[in-house]
Image 1 (cartoon, rainbow, N blue to C red):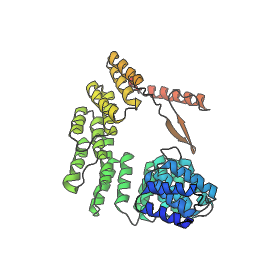
Image 2: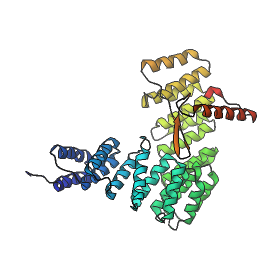
Image 3: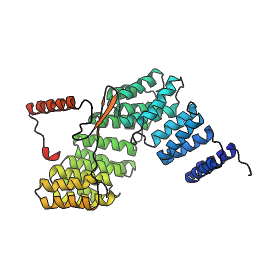
Length: 404
C-alpha cells in the first residue's frame, strides 16, 4: 500500500493482537507513529488490551499520555480500557492506585454507568489495596445501583469486602445472592479463612459440596489458610491429601507453601523441611522464606543455613535473607559467622532495603518506616506509641526484643 489509513493500521495491529503476536503489534504501532499516521480510539483500546495481557505498565502509561494528547479522556470505552489495564498490570503494587480510582470517580460524576468489566476491575483493585473506606464506598454504590445481582460482580464484591475486613458485609451479600458459582463460594471461604473464621470456612465448604459444586485448587488455598491460621495441622494435611486422591487436583506451589507455613507455625521445622524435600513441584522463595523466618523464631541455625543457600540462588539481591541469617547467628552467639554474612553482603554489593508500613486513617493512607521522623505529626505518634507500650507492660506483655 502506498498510502496507509488509520483503518489499515488498526486492522494490522488487531490481527497481530488477536493472533497473540503482541510484540509485533506494539512494533507496528511505533511504525505508525513514525509515519505520522493518526491513531484513534480503536488503536488505543487495542493497545491497552495488549498492555493488560502482557502486564506492561510502562507502555500502558505511554499510551495513556497519548490518549490525553488525542483528547480521548472522556471516551467511556477508552476509560474502561485504561482502568482494566491499570488493574491487570497490578497498579496497586506499582504505587498508582489513585489514578484508577480517580478515573472511576470521574465516570460516576459524569453519569457514565460502569459496565461489568469496569466494576470487577475496580473491586479487584480495591481488594488489593485493602482500603476499608474506599471499599465501603464502592460497595455501597454498587449495591445502591443494584449492580451486584450478577454472579461476577457479586463474587468480586464478596472478595473485596472480605479483603477490606468487612466480613459482615461479605456474609450479608453472599446470603442475598440468588446466583452463585464456584468463584462465589471460593471468595467467601477465603474471606472467612483470612479473617480468622476457620470453622465457618469449613462449614461453608461442606455446604458447597452438598449443593454439588466441585471444589477447585482455589478452594483448597482457602481451606489450608484457615488451617494455618488456627494451627490445625492434621486437618490441613487431610485437606491437602484429599486434593489429588478425592478430587483429582494436583497440588500447586501455593498449597505446598500453606503446608510449610502450617508446620512452621506449629514449631515442626523438621517436618516442614522433610515436606519441602519431598515436594513434586520446585520450592519457591515464599517456601524457603517461610522456613527461614521460622528458623529465626525457633533459633534453628542449621535449617536457616539450608534455607539461605537456596534463597541466595533464587533472589541474590534480597538483603533480608542475609540479614536474617546474620541475626540468627548473632542470637546463637556465633558472632564470627554473623560478621561474615554482613561482609558477604558488602562484597556482593547487596543493599539493605527498608520496608514501609502503611496505615489508613480517615480516608488518608500514611506510610512510615523504622525510626521515621518525616511525618508532620511525628511527636504525637511517638507519644502514642510510648503510651501503648506502657499499657502492654501493665497487662503483662513481655516483647521478645531479639526478634525486632
